[in-house]
Length: 313
Image 1 (cartoon, rainbow, N blue to C red):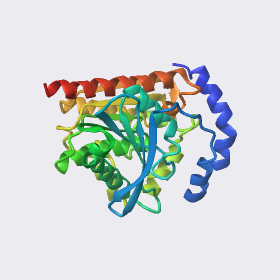
Image 2 (cartoon, rainbow, N blue to C red):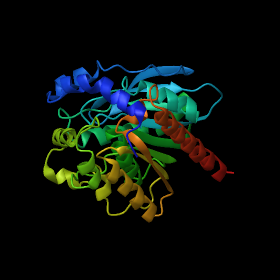
Image 3 (cartoon, helix red, strand yellow):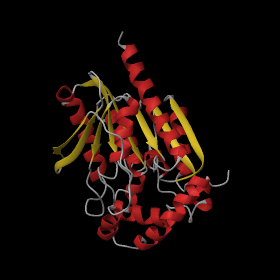
Image 4 (cartoon, rainbow, N blue to C red):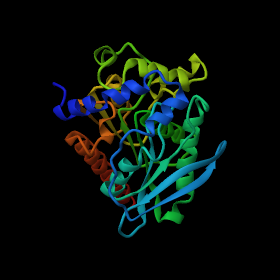
C-alpha cells in the first residue's frame, strides 16, 4: 500500500530534526530526543512518580490510575528508544491513552539505558518492576492476578523478554503481552530491512547502531532475553497482541515472533498496519491509524483482563 498521506506529512515535518540528530553519540542523541515535540495526552484520575527497588539501585516509575472503582487490572509499560534513548516523559501520552482506554493502572518504567548500562540491565530492571507491581498491588488498588506487560519497539522487546523471564523464573503470572513493532532478533537480512532500509524514519543504520550500544558482545545476540525469537520454546507465555508497521525494518521479525507464538499454542493476534512507519503508535495526535492501533491495544487488554476475571468464577 502507498505511504499513508498523514504519515508523509509527519515525515516531512520531522526530516530536518532527524537530520540534526543523525550520527550523534548516545548522550547527545538522548538529549536531542528530549527536545522533540510531543503531544500532551489526556487527563487521568491521578498520576504518581515513585522510585522502586531495582537490581542496581532505584528505578523511577510513573503510575497512572484511571477513574472508577478498583481493584483495577494493571499494565506495566516499557518505552521504546533502542534501549538507548527515551524515558517516562516520552511515553507519557501513550501511557495516558492506555490507562483510560483499557481502564487499567499503567506503571511506566524508566529502566537503565545503554551504552552506560548494557544488556541485561534493561530487561532485569523491567522484570524487577513487574515483580514489584505484583507484590505491591494492594497499595494502588490493583488486582495482582490481572497484570499485563507491554511496550513499543525496544519496549516491545523488553515486554517479550519479561514474559519469558516470568515464565522461566516462576512468575509473576501475566495476563497478556502487548508487543508494538517489537525488536525480536538481530537479523538484518529480512525482506523488510531491504525494503525499508532508509527514508521512513527508523533506518537500518539506526538499528545497527542501537544493537551496538546495547549488547556486551556478539554472543548476547543469541540470548533469548535480548532476542526473544532465539528462544527454543515459546510455550507457556501469556496471550499476545503483536502490532507491526508496513514501512518498518522491524516488520518481518515482529511477524515471525507472532507466528512462533501461535505455533507454540499461545493465543496471539497479529496486525500489520498498512501505509505507516515505525513509531506510528505514539503519533495518535496526527495519525488516524495510530488512534486505531491504540484502540486495538486497549480492546485487547480489556478482553484479556475480563477473561482472567471470568476464569476465576
